Length: 64
Image (cartoon, rainbow, N blue to C red; front, top):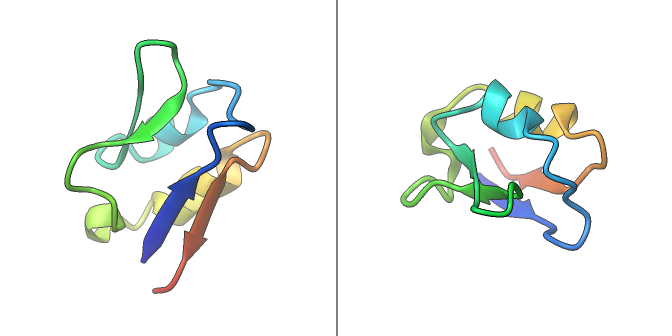
């Protein structure tokens, strides 16, 4: 799976980090980012839920 975060859309709500803390975190400014080595989701079943939880749709998940 491929995960992308549109940094121009992200508002730093943190819902992704709450839904999938093994994949997402927040940078020093509070915006979403992927944890190192988790760019493919690391098999976490909550990645798609994290994308759905984003209130502004900043996260895109493609592939399986």
